[in-house]
Image (tube, rainbow, N blue to C red; front, side):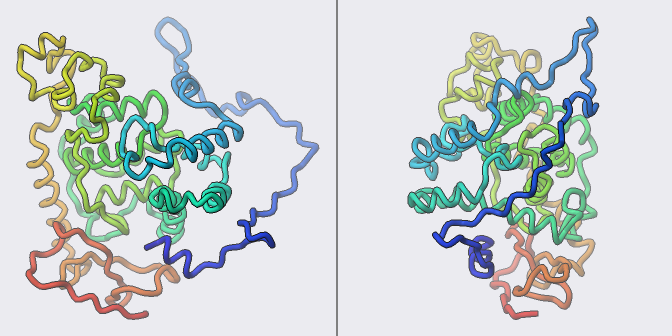
Amino acid sequence: AWRQASESGAQVVRDKAGYLAPAAPKEVLQHCGGLQLTSLGLASMPFKHDGTEVDWGAGIRSAWNFGEEEALKMFANFCSESLPTYETQRHLADASTVSRLSPYIHFGVISPRCMLEEMEARGYERMAPTFLRRLVWRDLAYWQLYHWPALPYQPVRPSYVARLWAADSPRLLVAWQKGRTGYPMVDAAMRELWATGWMHQSMRTVVACFLVGACGVDWRAGARHFHYTLVDADLAINSMMWQSAGQCGLDQWGFWASPTAGKQDPGGAWVRRWVPELAGLPTRFVHQPWEAPRDLLLDSNVILGENYPHRIVADVERARSSHLQSVNASRMSVREWVDEDGYDLIDIPPGAVKNGTFHGSKIRVFTTRGHRKISETKPSLKKFKK
């Protein structure tokens, strides 16, 4: 919807040949001699007990090659090798079919305009419409942050401000951050993030759903950790994503990304790489080791509670139900922000929205069925211009 609206309401600047016109470069001061990055004192590295410095960047340096040449090479390889199977295999956690270009886009190493132009010229946009849609998410996030500048720390939906979080949130958060939750899919993703500064998009949804929906930890804690650890950390995109995970943003995730389904890692190789404690388990049990017979665990050198943790949330479905009840209790405590059909209402910043279902100065936003009032009738959707 955002892409359609942007295409219909915006004028795309193109040059005489019809290509997307790049912005004019700013004048470069030739007399600036530059300086060493270390002289700025931007970081102070910690030291071990033996006095040696901790090299926090080692894992990231080994996981990435830097510069425009590398970004262009990665994009070319993605278009020729991965794009044909992107739509059907983009969910795989091993990143074999995704571009991994998000850090390069974030730092301006490669231009989204150039990527779009290349894909249009070769007809690739018809091959992978989801890739283009995700490219446009970036602009959607910037639009949201512009109109809702408190996006990183304040729920867009006022009815969610009073939401109560888990009493033991600090313990749950630390286990999640360290990849010690007892859920191999979650742990593998969090360990990969810490080691390389990156996490696959599908796994970002898994770990976010788990932290908020199963653990009951404040979405802002997850957003802060992501912003601190991701090499592609973008304030707007990160905030939009975590607000959606917290069910309190302009959008709500209408799905549950299971921490046990294993569809992102059907063969178990990815989990075995990042959670080597479970490497000896058969694929049938590698995503749910608690289901394995005790003798098989011992034969695989897995001792739950010792060399791999017990689950920090034993019953995910029960935890999800509790989460839903807590959210709805918060919503019902401020009924002026919920309309007669159970849809959430938000204030409209000046100039942000032209069309929608308005309630005075408020507008209805998408609300998942689980958060709406139980009703056998369809909600009224009378739309009019403000």
